[in-house]
Image 1 (cartoon, helix red, strand yellow):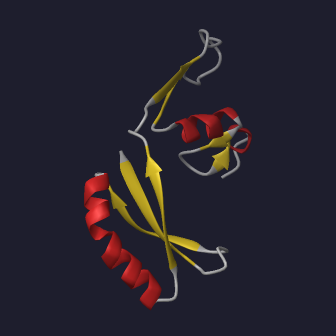
Image 2: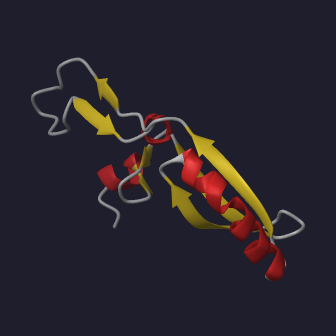
Length: 104
């Protein structure tokens, strides 16, 4: 389980990730110092607790022999898999449609 730590503006319109802790106990030990640093710079400390990292594999039926795309895709998170299924090329930030049309 990991904890991502952010400094957010007081109006919550802006946030910057400032730390990632693989262990929640270490985060807990650093919380007071992080809160003091955020306050001294005019920010609010927020955090996001993440479950263990998940690997997602999606396998489609056998590909068309003329299609060079693989039929199995591996992702580091459910969010990446969902983005892929919505047509976003998560490795390059471009949509799959744009990539397949040859746009660079």
